[in-house]
Image 1 (cartoon, rainbow, N blue to C red):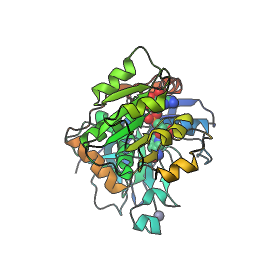
Image 2 (image 1 turned 45 degrees about the horizontal axis):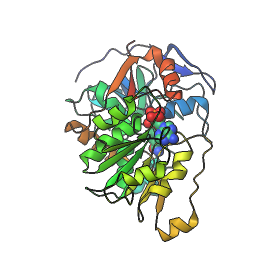
Image 3 (image 1 turned 135 degrees about the horizontal axis):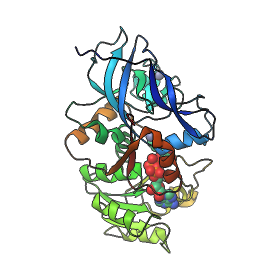
Image 4 (image 1 turned 120 degrees about the vertical axis):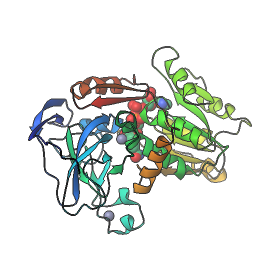
Length: 356
Ligand code: NAD
Ligand code: ZN
Ligand code: ZN
């Protein structure tokens, strides 16, 4: 078994008050509890959730001070005495669900994200924007050794979440799915997972420079691109993008705006399903009762994924089916990534390298 030298101090990004900023500083390295592992995080993806957490956007308090991050890929360097099925030196991932009780009625049915005792990485417990992070061994993602830790990091939240959302949508191979927020982190993954699952996609996004977002979505496999900023009639345009003009069978709502959540029920096909995944601050769902009833529309939420979804999502990646462009910067530059994210200027995903 390899031995690792574990330092007593490490670099981290710490949110010291709600609203930010996140401060790059040295903090102590913690020791794992009996059922936990300590992961030397090499790379971490930056999810819009990390920005929501820092800004206090949601009706659920974060810990303070807070180390954000929940797409952390690294190496297990220490473990508690109860941990039997993962070894020092194994590759593992810190994901949003850091731990859960494994005993409640939700955990018993593999709905562990719904556990009332769930621990959330980078929200209720410190996450992966540090060099050494802790998670419950039962919940860390098992990353195959042949997978590149830098490339796989965004799969640990964005990938798992959209894969689960596509499954929840019930869309079958050959059908059409609209992806709202398609050029962002989750959206880019959604286009790739959808293609791998045999689905056609309509990408909806906008802004950015020139045709950058449209080209990005098309390169990831989208059959059509609708610009929410330029379109005169978005509902008509989305419907027209399907071969029979009746609209997509499912919609994945990933945008950080309220309006697209309201529009989705208008263009989804009759009998179709709207899956809500994005979490804009203070937003509400609104759909006409009449049309929802007589067109038999389903509107539902989807929240990350369980341990099985995690391993399935990683398996798609390991088979080479998921390739999403990303940019890597140092952990010290996290603030700049948040600014780009706030301005809607990110195409694909940003990953931070914890060594700089
Ligand atoms: P991101 O910033 O990378 O992407 C958001 C995209 O939405 C951007 O490309 C933006 O241009 C686009 N957009 C903005 N307004 C739009 C509109 N009106 N129509 C279409 N597109 C629009 O963010 P991300 O990291 O992909 O996260 C997206 C959301 O998903 C966040 O709210 C995040 O908290 C949430 N999230 C939810 C879960 C879950 O389990 N439900 C998991 C992870 C993330
Ligand atoms: Zn996330
Ligand atoms: Zn539970």
